Image (cartoon, rainbow, N blue to C red; front, side, top):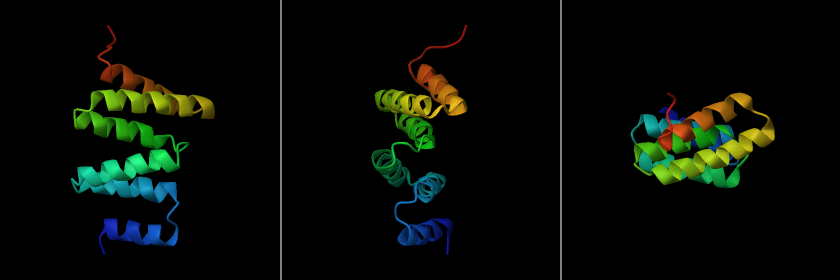
Length: 107
């Protein structure tokens, strides 16, 4: 059984586990199944908006797909979540990613 099949089996047991869903999206990316990865990440943001790690990875995926505005909006939403949770490391990473996507550099 490959990693994707294992994660799907875990989801059959607990379909609401955000960590397993996040891991599944990452495995789809590794397998170059980008459309499936987007689908899982977007679903995770919708059903588990407090799972802050999703925003960075979904934003990066949008950038990879030349969906810059979607990336910026995703980072902004993640910034709000990270700020409300007091997650300083995630907040900093999301702010940096958003500025980079907006073309704001450090000089």
